Length: 234
Image 1: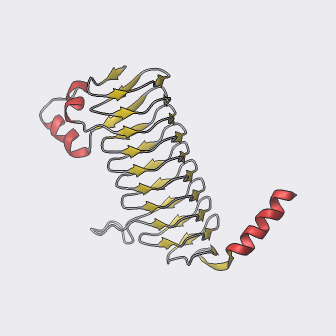
Image 2: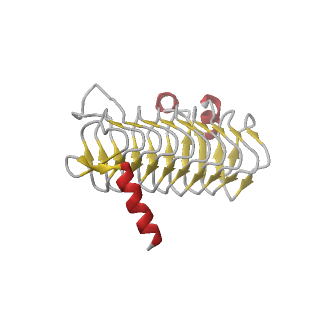
Image 3: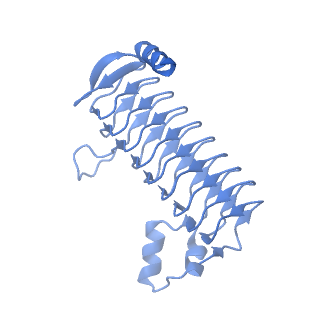
């Protein structure tokens, strides 16, 4: 089904196929919206209220949705869902089947890989590269120029299930390796590197390299960059 709200503000946007755009959603020029995408999906409270009153239709969803704001030159691939009250900057590029929940703010020039879940109330800076199948829960902060490898898992509940949630903070220029797990509340310092498969239970100092379970310091950013140069030349 193809449904575009009369309240939506869409300028010079290419639609691949059928999609649903709800509420006063705005999409910037030269953006591409893939097939079977929903933008402006209502938050849980609004949806449950509609269900309890037997008012389940796209017109009803459109009535309660606050919409989302999508910047210019964005490329959002098929089967993705973006909730209401999401703000996205220019030149976002996503894979397929991503989920971005409400009250998430994303900067400019961000890449998000297929199957990634951003579970709401998350802050993501500029020039961030998030690979496929990453999980980012409520309360996380990801600063500029961060790289997050595939299947990395950020958490926000240290003793689940508990009533206290505290997200992970990843400072500028940090690198998070594939299949790593960051335990609730930790801070990854500026320029730090988390090796693939690491389980981070404590704060990571800036410009350090950590690995293992639990993660421990094994080197510095300088040594990591030296190895990177050698790798790229061979």
